[in-house]
Length: 250
Image (cartoon, rainbow, N blue to C red; front, side):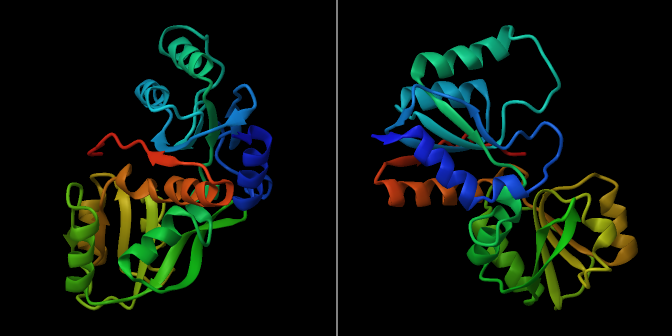
C-alpha cells in the first residue's frame, strides 16, 4: 500500500503538470480521489463507465487516463455520469488524467514512445499549444520500411495514403488527431505524418500537396503514455499495474 498523495505528487512532477497549459476541460492531475491509499495501478486511454467497471473488477484503485472525466462544461450528476462517480466511490478508485503532458513529454509521452517503438530518431519538436511543442520530428527512413513497421505496430488500425516521397527526409509523429499538423507539414520540413486520425478532406490534401499520411487510430496511438507512466510508477512504488485495453478501432 502506498499513499495516494505520494503517487499523485510523483505524477505531477514527472509530467510537469503545472507548467503545461492544456485544452479547456482537460483538468490534468487528480480528477477523482479515493480513501487515500493505492494498492494497484491501472492505465487506460479513456475515462468511460466500462473502464471504471473493469478497473473495479480487477482491483485497481489508481487509474491513469489520457482522456479524462471532465471535458464537458458543467453537467448534472445523473445517468452515466452518476454511474461513473458511484463506481469509483464504491470501488475506491482514484482517477488521474494527463492529456497534453502525456503527448508532449520527451521520455514517456505518446510521441516519444511511438518514435522509440518505430525505431525513429527524434531530431526536434514542433507544433505548439500555448508554449508546449508536442509533435516529434524524426529523421526519415524509406517509406517501405516505415510502412512495414507501422503495420507491425498497428495491425488492426493501420491505414496509408501514400502520395509523398518514397524516401522522406523527415517524418512527423502526432498521436491522436493529426488535423492540426497537416497545414504545417511543409513548414516543418516534412511530407510524411504518422498520426491517429484525420478528416476525409485530407485525402485530397495529400494528393494535392504530395504527402504521405498514416492515420493509425486515435486510440491506438494514445495508449503509450499512460502505460509508460504506469510502468514507471509500478517500478518506483513496487505496485502491480495493468493496461485496460478495449480494442477500440477508431
